[in-house]
Picture 1 (cartoon, rainbow, N blue to C red):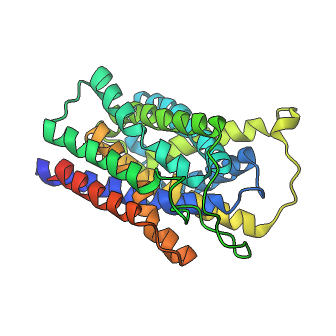
Picture 2: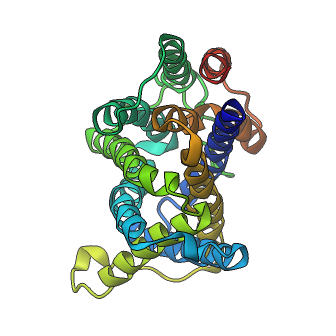
Length: 311
């Protein structure tokens, strides 16, 4: 039963990676249209509405007690309020490709934090699997200057043919990506005790997203010009934001919370960080341009690494 439970947690983590990949593609469509703070506010409100409704249907509110609530609040601070904001900003500044690459740093961050604070261990085979996953992801999306077609960014409908070389991402964008990875790792670490105590995944996500929604609503009352960018409301923008919230902050994060119930925090975060691999076929379908060979080779290596972790 223990092995089955671990397998299910790993499957849930991979499913979360797929959802987050789709969410990232949707978010990139809003670059230049919706500012980061507004996008975060929309996303958190939508995610809370979805997960709260799911919790009512499932009857999961009674699984959250006071001790678990403060842990989930701490998880919300690091994993959503900070990490989601820097995640959106990193996508806008550095692009979804570089952001996804930097997000893989959540794995070593989580392993270190899990070892330091939760006393978790990892076998040599699993450590080698983690290494293979990271190497695979680096190969899949890390050859920015060498490829002729972007491996993750989706060309706009009316743009010219892609150029042969992509500009280097800014230091600010990369720093935001690193902060996102660390925030995600800290958020997972804080949520783990609550999930182990039996908190319902949807209820846990509702608490986390609800706290974040209150924070971003409060920001709307702050008389600071930088927090109030000019914007003319467009329904298509709202629809994309809500869809990205459903697949990312709602479904994706709920799956991640469920995976943390029985899974090792480092392994779960590693598998859920495979978003750069999962996004490749999505980009192919969206753009009609096949990813470069290095991307597929990296994906194969990551799959081998996943097998070393899971089997």
